[in-house]
Length: 210
Image (cartoon, rainbow, N blue to C red):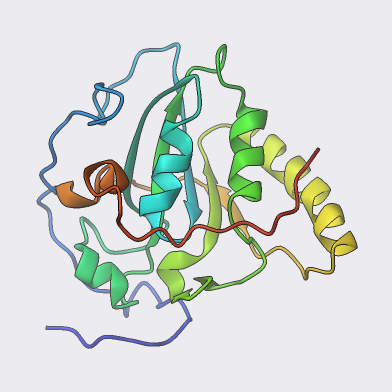
């Protein structure tokens, strides 16, 4: 048993829920792109993990990009192994709701992906996104390569200048090495393709790079 938390503060590793050894079972097929959502993936593909609020709308934003091979939603940047959605929402796992983006860099540039990331949500809101509040809704770029870190840092600094000119505060996006990605429950995968009228809390600032 665990107690739901309204705190917008991350738990410590010792306070986090224990989790489990069993992986979340998912259908290994993207319902839109008709490709696997679990690896291993071929060497011509790269991966990055992004958190930008509720992962339903965030995933759709990326599967629509030309050159993106596949996407999946899950939990990362926390402590609890193989958490459930209910556990993540409790605030006691430390995880963020994230999207795994698998892309072909010759067809979809890293620059494009990170620009879409920043433009598609409000990265200044801390532990929330719009009306969705909690640590699982924080903004985050979780990189797998040094190149991804450099791009994220550079574009974050560039976007901060544009946001400042538009009256927004400081970006709170965490840019960190990718931790373990745990797949979310199957009904969350490509949720808005399965439920076209489903909830999407994704909303940007209206400030673009170009």
